[in-house]
Amino acid sequence: MTTSNVFIIESLKLDDEKNERYEGKFLSHILNLDRNKKTSIYYYIRTKKELIEILKKFDTSNYRYLHISCHGNDKNVSMTLDKIPYEEFGEIVRPHLDKKRLFLSACEAVNLSMAKEIIPNSKCYSLIGFDQSIEFSDAAMMWASFYHLMFKKNPRAMKRKDICQILQKIKVTYGINMRFFSRSTKFPGGIQEDVTK
Image 1 (cartoon, helix red, strand yellow):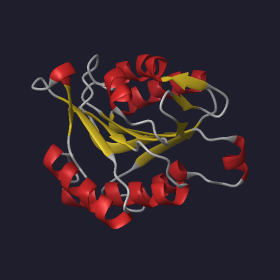
Image 2 (cartoon, one colour; image 1 turned 90 degrees about the vertical axis):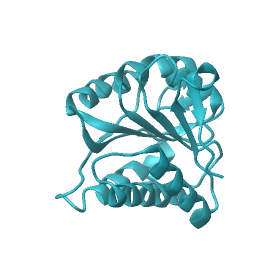
Image 3 (cartoon, one colour; image 1 turned 180 degrees about the vertical axis):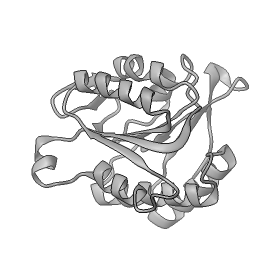
Image 4 (cartoon, one colour; image 1 turned 45 degrees about the vertical axis):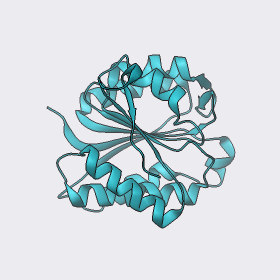
């Protein structure tokens, strides 16, 4: 049985490391402030090989939510030293997402193309993140707000209706939309996009 906690994997550019732009580390600190309710596990990695190894630790953690903070665009996600095309990224993460949710904090990377690589061939509940470029400070504050509001509403589970409501609040507060794709047998390709605009 899984626990409703957040497992964070982060991988940034060398310049980001030098300037300490660690969004995932910041998020981990926020989540760990209340030890009685939520905890997080945080790993910093630099390569695709490390991603593959740390995902095994995600499996054994029994945490329900996987948050990956990295760079991205409309074709790839990037570790510090490796670019990973969507198709390969999907192959790497899909086996670890049964009955889990993936939160991807990577500029421009959460779109229908990415959703098609993640959701139909896994039992992943959802994919949430940005389809546009976003500043580190905005991303850190938005994710912290999202998790805080979600766990305040229900510390045991994330429900579709609640996710939509909170993503709408995030949109109103920060002026930035987050995309929300989920598994559904009612929609073509087995993917539903919930409107949060």
